[in-house]
Image (cartoon, rainbow, N blue to C red; front, side, top):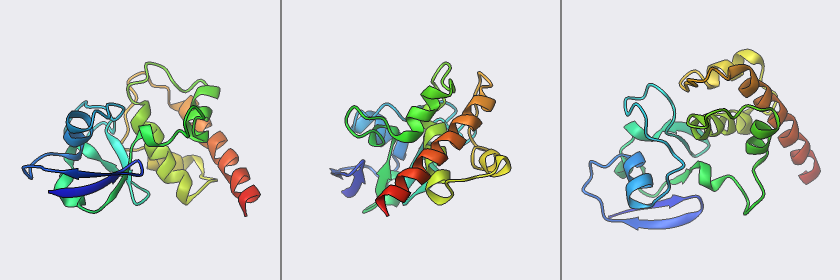
Length: 159
């Protein structure tokens, strides 16, 4: 048995020990926003965050995260209110086929939580493990920069 907090909800999971986080999210919990693609840590479609860091769920054993907190794409929105990163992706026209978007957005969140004003090079580095087959990178970069501005502004209002 392991305990995982996923999107602020605590789960007790009876696992065999070899299940990846991706398998647990999709097959055990029905959280299908995290995509299955290469299953070899090559594409980034399965990116989630743990303690604010982007990780690949396809190569992470769920048991290794016992007691940990995971955020998936389903955990970003507040009800019907999209997270600023999700909204910026839509506003900037960064969403094409949508398959890579959950991973891209989660990598973007990890970056922007650490640095709301990243340079182009910092964005490229943060997304280095995420592949977009539609080659929508320019719009994705614009969305990240826009989301950073929005998040910085929100933080100013809170503080």
